[in-house]
Image (tube, rainbow, N blue to C red; front, side, top):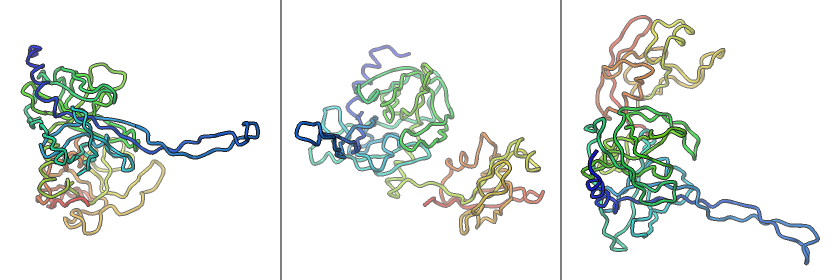
Amino acid sequence: MKDDSSIVKVVKKVLPSVVSITVSKYLEFFESSPSGPFGFQGFRGFLKRKKTKVGGGSGFIIDSNGIILTNRHVVEDPNAEYVVMLQNGKKFKPEILARDPINDIAVLKINSSTNSEKLSAIKFGDSSKVELGQTVIAIGNALGLFRNTVSSGIISGLSREITAQSDFSKEKTKLRGLMQTDAAINPGNSGGPLIDISGSAVGINSATVFGAENISFALPINNAKKDFEELKEYGRIRQPFLGLRYLLLDDEIKNRFGLPVNFGALVIAEPIEPGISIGFGEAVIPNSPAHRAGIRESDIILEFANKKITQKNTLSDVLVELEIGTKLPLKVLRNGTEKNLKIVLGEKN
């Protein structure tokens, strides 16, 4: 690990770019008061609303014009109010430019020009070049209480996959390609930067494993770079789209339905439950890329973009790495015969 003086220099360099994000909502509560002149003739109540802090997180400035990166789950509640606080204590109400639910990334903007506030931005690193054992530094707003919390450690794992649950929606999301680090990341650190020893952001602090020590995860910064570039070019974060419903196959499903293979994606309407016949809806959405490519219900997609589809390498896993508008090969099994199709990726509305 680098000596302490190197870490101190990096922290001083990037700290002005790290921000705190507070989350507030108006919550209703019932307040009672005596109805009689001396309080002995019963009570009556009043419904009141009070602005209450309900959460917090971190973020970091990536552009001196006020562009900030954080986690989507930090700012996912559309009914909440968000406030960004700079290192000097100045507060701003941010505009949420985009949310990326697949990669758990959000892009915010604050208008500091009216205050003549000069913003310092953190440079992007390259998460594809991060190596095991590399020194990293996590900075954030630990527990929503302790600003400028700094911890250092190493990259202890790459390409990790976890299932995270949103505090707001309670939805579970699979996050893939994460970097594992033993640098301490606490609730409230979410959205803060994971920095390399040169002071560049290589990740976005995202999650920790409750009940485990020294196991934390960060989103690779290259996902955020892609989102930021798309936002600048198209005004939105685009998501590739196939337009079909499917069920991933394994040995159990193969045996239950008498299928010829134990891998791939069975194109079928959802849901399917044990003891219940095939579900509802359309397996292939009309006029979608899948429909135009000639994919039919009951097809089994064996390969997509020359990659075998399995429980560990799903259609979604392959999809997020591809560019909208590209024409890609797709191999399906139909009535016992393999067919090679071509599909042009669309954009999800």
